[in-house]
Length: 118
Image 1: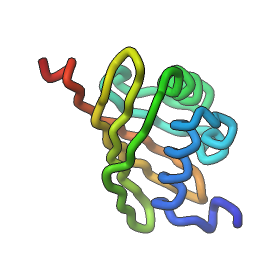
Image 2: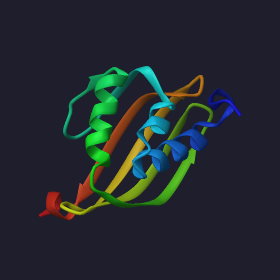
Image 3: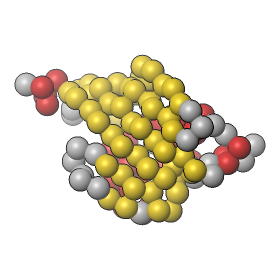
Image 4: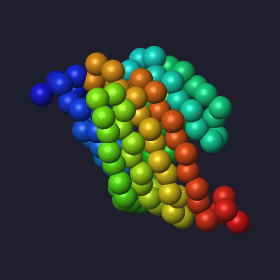
């Protein structure tokens, strides 16, 4: 089934599983060329090349991603998860992904970690 026929929630979960398992080619297949990212480390970045480069850096050293909750509607999906990395420990994250025509067009990330809270 083509991604454009999948719900935003299905796309968001497949995307999360792909990058968390370091399958960046599959993750890239869900990303729109003109994606816009907003996150704590980057005010805003645009474009698939930069986004995927940053995603590859994030995926390095991931030991586990545990999805805590996920929901979506016809245009957006929110995925909350615990991200475990060897050198950072556990970070609780939430992504709000906006999807159009089967591709992620906007990604807003928020997170907290024990280190950030200390």
